[in-house]
Length: 299
Image (cartoon, rainbow, N blue to C red; front, side, top):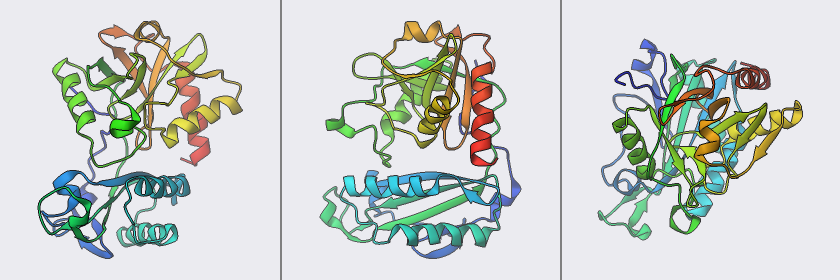
């Protein structure tokens, strides 16, 4: 398969050529928005981030995203040096400066700042933190269900790098994505340390079997905000939903499969490891959950 796609495919938008990016309190044209080569994020992947989507003038689940950002920063002992309200104000400043009203995506990144020497010790970061807000016109454009390949890269144990942490250190997921593309798929399906189906390199993963929605226990994956909203929608609308361990055998025999994430919301999966899932197209349960989610976010 040569026509690889991604769960982050977006429509081309010429307006993005002139976006303004928030860098440490200053709005700069994208061509002038830079950070130091000594920045700990560039040098070591030492930072945390969040992605937000704008629907009809409202950042969806903004408070939950900001709370998760501050929790992640605390976990890595990074002082954001702003309050949550100040971060929200910076997002709003960036939105207003760019004139965004809907179908926009924001990437909010905070690193430990600029280092005085190119080594890893956190005390060497003497200026910072660094905060960047990239905001673009962004409307998902995923032309077909995505195809996945199971890869040897795992979402690991919390004592290595906790997969619940939204950190800049994404190499494990990048290597998984590369392995999937080498296998002819779009993205990677990753297992947990026990061999159960877990998540993809970029999104949370769900299957549907006999009308019941299944997803992982959440022990070894990013507990995505969109993931939780789908689980909540299932419970609120009498759609059976299990958070459980399940295998590739369960997955291959599923009637439907889909991914969740802030950018793509619910993205259907057509194939896993060369096995067509259900009809290979958007299934009825996924379609219903899409409609319920659109109502929830006002899209």
